[in-house]
Length: 288
Image 1 (tube, helix red, strand yellow):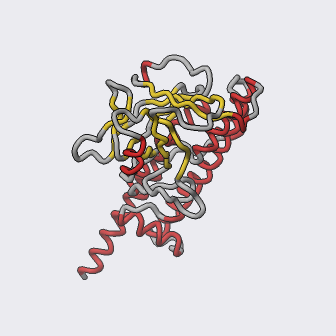
Image 2 (cartoon, helix red, strand yellow; image 1 turned 90 degrees about the vertical axis):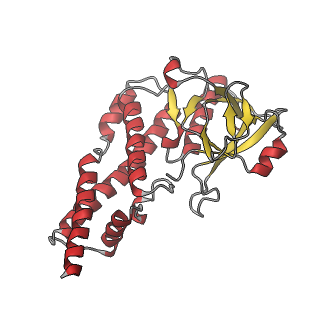
Image 3 (cartoon, helix red, strand yellow; image 1 turned 60 degrees about the vertical axis):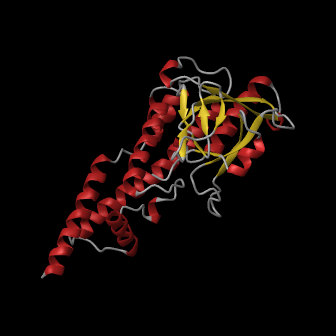
């Protein structure tokens, strides 16, 4: 009898979570309407292409989420068969882990609750970009393929200047001001937010890397202006070539590497060797 009571309460918990997620789940993007809207805007073509590719990937994820949540609800009510895939979704909801069948769009180590909130923020950024305007500051975390967006920025600059895209690299200017203080688009490139430092913090006063505060594993990085420029052979003096990763698992997986690019940051009172030994890196997403 006790086992039956426990099973019923477990089923009720998962059903409640599934219904709550289903109710909050954003609608799939209407690609035809968005393509029409974008055709009337003067955004650079490479950026429009990246947006449509991102929307397409998020649509695939939203469809899988909506279908599996609806089927799970029917399965718990005894109205359809619970397949091994749905069983995995059930177990994920019970343990607060992201089921494998939902984890294909982008890598993440977040538990289910944080992952869901993060997904909604990602959809919100793409929705505003598609329906309102190009963001003045991009939440860099929100891209399923951040490197694709960087390539599009280089293509946009190359078309404007006539330079070969292979000849272009990046300059990184740290902007120590709040997002609401930025009212203009940059002339080239993009302003990026949502980046974290691991193994260091940013000294706002002096504008360089510094020792992290006690007990601080990660610290938020200010907005960075990713500005296309002629590629240099060597990193500028007094800078640390800081690797940027999509999430804390730096190796990534065989299918999806975590590494994005090297970002040159002023190394401050320490040499770049100091930060190399420290393993200092930039992350686009944390594990919580």
